[in-house]
Image (cartoon, rainbow, N blue to C red; front, side, top):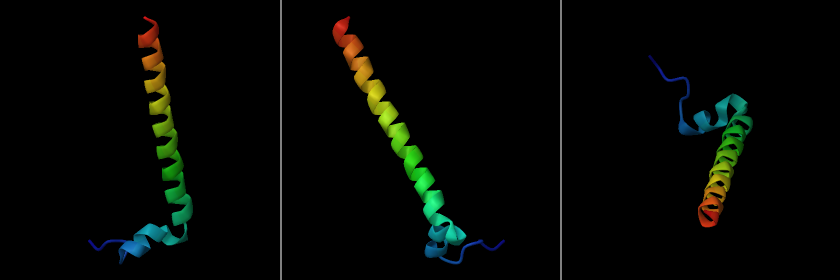
Length: 50
């Protein structure tokens, strides 16, 4: 079985859709990180109140 991409650059380009694919991954990762940080802050505030 041969790989679909012949190089790392081809893999990152994703057949011309790399910007959209990697951009979507980046936005999702950023949203998850921001959510985790917000949850951490909320938990600390609740612990300080109690």
